[in-house]
Amino acid sequence: MTIKRVAVFIDGSNFFHKLKELGLVNLTKFDYKGLVDSLVSDSIISYYGYYVGVVRAKEGVTRGQVLRRSQQRSFAHLESQGQCFIVKRGTVMENGGVYHEKGVDVGLAVDLLVGAYENNYDKALVISSDTDLVPAIRKVVALKKEVEYIGFAHRPSFGLQKYATRSRLLILEELKKFEQPP
Image (cartoon, rainbow, N blue to C red; front, side):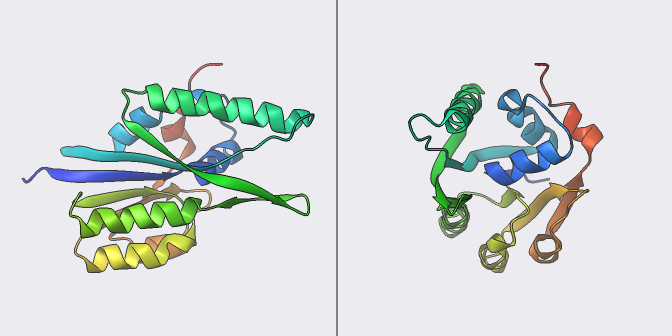
């Protein structure tokens, strides 16, 4: 059996919110590396990318300051896990009281495509449920690379399942193993 090179692409905000929906806590210390290692066997991980919009807290807004500090702790935790994760930062923009990430999906899609074109991996592990990634995934598959969609059993993305070469849906019991005590 040939050892494959695997590139991991995690949509951070999407992943975080799905874990919260499942009732997991203390997500600033979640064992992302442990989860990824459990999903990849007989392979070399060539890239760990974590994509997320950065909270920009306005002065005097307590909730924003708390969110920003929590996010900074999460980044430090990710970057300390064997120095393997590269945190790719987008922005978070507010519009009429609603917050939206900008540049995160595009950054993930670009890195997914560039890695395929430059032959940096044989298989991409995409941990997201965002169907905005479908065009990039379709192209990567057309380039003869494997794409494994990792989603959540309680809210799967049928679009990503349809276009990925393989999919796996995580359940709460699997994820609890990587939740760290408060």
